[in-house]
Length: 268
Image 1 (tube, rainbow, N blue to C red):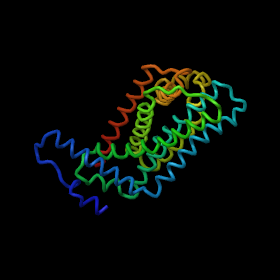
Image 2 (spheres, rainbow, N blue to C red):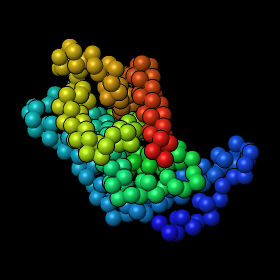
Image 3 (cartoon, rainbow, N blue to C red):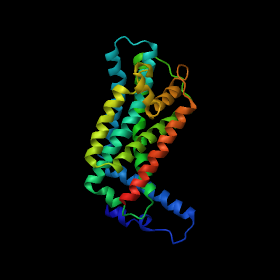
Image 4 (cartoon, rainbow, N blue to C red):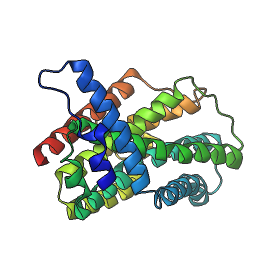
């Protein structure tokens, strides 16, 4: 922490009345340094986290197949295209808030807020790390699904930006409630979300399998739109996504980012 505190790129602040470009440059420089600090601080755990979330993607593809039994073509596509979405969402809604809880408990979150940087820089650095961490599981889960069920993807050119958007949205939501709720409540909420995501969200199975009231709830929640966008990006020959799906995810992302930034300012 000492090296980071004394780094002149951190302690230098723009003069009063400085231009917006100088403030933006300071924020960008601080964000890049915070990313380096987060990676170095968690260097021992990031590889393990990558392995865990990759195993989750693979086990989702294979485990649901064992539960279902004989998997037809449509079910195979749902499983193969749903696993990457589950991986991205779990990283954001579970691992991100738990890491935030750890930072608040050990005091590093409060220490970081003493640095002369915009509150958005802290959020941008954390979201970048968690978004990049989710990508290996997405790729491997997609490959395992294709090999296990002998399916062929029809990748859309926008599948990678959609994957980044899904990861960013999930991480923003997780970051927001981790910054707003007490640590114990945050851990309970994140654990409950895993249960709800795996069993009661139309990610690896059609929404028609759910009761009517739950289908209606998922029209407002971001999980089904995320899954629709990912399915359409991976297997456009069988699935499509609507503009409403994209708008829903973008709105949830904007609201979560705003809530997280406001929480950081309030606690700062």
